[in-house]
Amino acid sequence: MELEDLGQSAREGNVGRLFNETARHHGDALAVEHHGERVTHAELSDATAEFAGGLHDLGVKPGDSMLVYLPNRPEYLVASLGALKAGVVVSPVNPQYKRRELSYQMEDSDAAAVVTHPALRPIVEQACEETGREPVVITVDQRGEDDDHLFDEVRGEPTLVERDDEDVALLPYTSGTTGKPKGVRLTHSNFRAQMFSALAPPHSIDPTEVRSLIWLPLYHITGFTHTACQPLVRGGALYLRSAVQWDGVEAMEMIEKEGITHFVGVTAMYVDIVNSDDFGEYDLTSLEMAAEGGAKMSETVQREFEATAGVEMAEGYGLTETAGATHSQTGSTYGLKHGTVGQPLRMFDAKIVDEDGKDVPVGDEGELLVRGPSVMDGYHGMPDATDAAFTDDGYFRTGDVARRDTRNYYEIVDRKKHVIVSAGYNIYPSEVEELLAEHDDVAEAAVVGIDDERRNEIPVAYVVTVPDVEAGEDVTAEEIKEYSLERIAEYKHPREVRFVDELPRTTSGKIRKFKLEERYENEEDA
Image 1 (cartoon, rainbow, N blue to C red):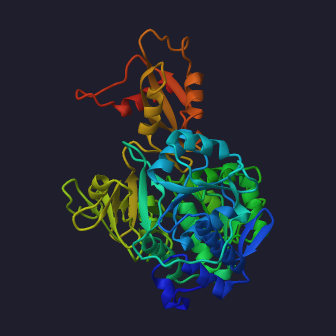
Image 2 (tube, helix red, strand yellow):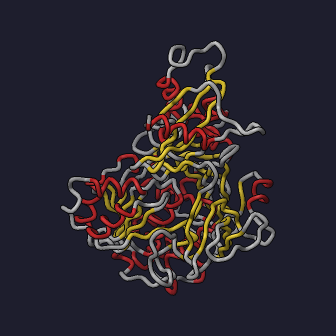
Image 3 (tube, helix red, strand yellow):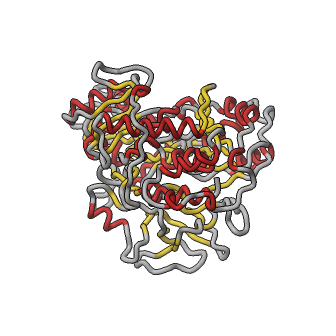
C-alpha cells in the first residue's frame, strides 16, 4: 500500500484504521509467519478487531491502559493492534522485567489489563500483590490462574472506536539517568506520522514483496515501529522470532530460505553472523535493506557483511520519545555515508546547539534537538520533566551530542550521559546503583560501562561495603550479582562486581566514573 491509496478516514483519528486499509488492499497477502504458523493481512485485521471487542466485553474501556508483557509472538501484535482499535492505550513491557520493574509500570500506568504468558504469570501476581491492583489478566496458550482469560477466547463484536489525533495510543517507558522510568505519551497522530514515513518515499520493491525478519524485541520502539508495523502497514510480511533466542546461523538460514528483504539488528547480531563459521555459506543477497542501531558498528564487521550480503548497511537514529527514527541513511539525498546516521527524515527539523541554545557552526559539536509530528506529547504524569525536555520553540532536547557536515549528514559523537549500551539495550546505571544500595551489606555502589567486543559495553559495579562487613568473606561478588539477577532484568545486572574501599569523588561529592573506567583498564593491563 502507498500513501495515495489511503482513504481520507485513515488520515486522522484512530491509527488502527491504517491496518484495516492494508487488509483492504492486500488481504490475501502474508502478514505474519511464526515457526510455521502463517496469518494473512485479512486474518490479522479480523483478529485485532475482534480482540478490541473482547476487551470492551471485559470492561476495558477506551482510554484505559493495557500492559503487553510478552515475548515476540503473533499474540503480541494482535493484542497491541487490537488495543489500538479499542481505543485502549498500549504500554509495552520488557519480558525480562522482574517484580519491582513490573510493579512500577503497572502502578504508574494505572493498568486496567495485562496480556502475558504463563511463564511470566507469577511475576504478574507478585506485582499485583505489591501494588494492590487487580487488572484483567489475559494469558496466551493457557490460563495462568482460574480468574485469567485465555487469549484466544477474548473475542467480541469487531470494533474500531473513534479517537482524536491527540489521544494517547502508546505508553512505552524509558529510563533516565536519574529518577524513575518515564512513561512516554505517544498519540495516534505521533504513531501515524511514523507509519506515513514508510508509505511516502519511493521503494525499490512491491509492498507485498517486503519480508521483514524480526529478532529485535517488539516491546522496543525500533522493533515495534520499524521492523513490524511499518512493513505491515505497507502490506509486507513479518517473520517473527524470539528476541531472547537469537541465533545467527538460523538468521542466515531464514534470509536464504524465505528471501528476507529487510533485517534490522544490533551490533552484537552482526558480529555473531560475521564471526560464525557458516558465514559465507548462505545466500544473503535477497536483502534490500540491512540496518543497525544502538551503537556504532565496527568498520571491519560492516565491510565483511556488506561484501558477502551484497547490500550496504544503513544506520539511523531515533528515540522512544520520537516514536522511532528522526534520521536515516536510507533515503538520504547523497546515499549512505558510513559513520553517520544520515539526514533528518523529511518530516523533521533538526539542529545542533551549544549550552546557550545557539546554533553551532557546521562541523562543531553540540546537543541534537529535533522537532516533528512524531515527537511525543510529553511524559506521563511528569509535567516538570516534560517542560524541561522541550525548548520554548518546541524542539525536543535529545541529550545526545552530535555534529553535522556540509551535506547535512548527522553524526552522533556521544550519547546521553552515563547510559550504557549493551547489545542494543540501554542500561541506566542509576537504576542498578539504587538496587545495589538496598543490599544490606552495601554502603554505596557505582556502575560503569566497560568496552566489550561483542556487546559494545558491559556494566561493571564498584561496591563499597558497610562497616564491619568484609568484602570477599562476609559478602562475595557472586552474591551481589545473584542479588541483582533476582530483582532486575538479566541484561541490566553487573557482569562483574569489584569491591573498593571508597569511590573517587569530586570536591562537590560527585562520583568520578571516568576514574573507575581508568582503574578497570589498569587492573586488566596489570
